[in-house]
Image 1 (cartoon, rainbow, N blue to C red):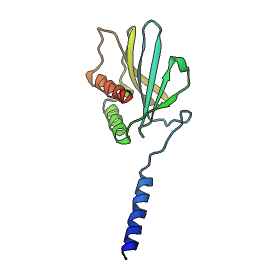
Image 2: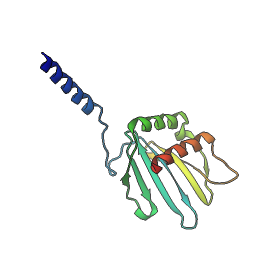
Image 3: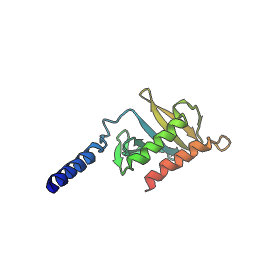
Image 4: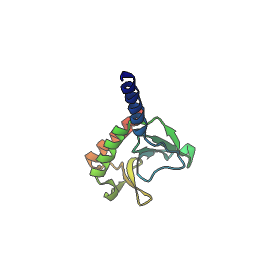
Length: 144
């Protein structure tokens, strides 16, 4: 009887582990729901883009890599989900704020198969502090 209970417990544990596994995406086949952020400008005009998926996967694209997107170390799905909730509460897809300076930062979301970006950098046109906080939170993911 103890053997049957132990076997069923082990089987249930294995089932739970596989049931909770998040799907993995390739750079060529990304889901529509994603958050973009990054920075650019300056003398070279170089722009660095990052993107976060709900499953915690992250990708990077720089001026040097052209259109190619490379996967980088991601984060936990729970943290990614919290960031997506924050982005939704800020209604990023509806905010129209385009005030880049010579050096600029941006954050955006995918909306109707197009990226909707909020860009800031002009000294006399500060972005909403809540958007700036989201940008810092996203940037901290890359630093880890």
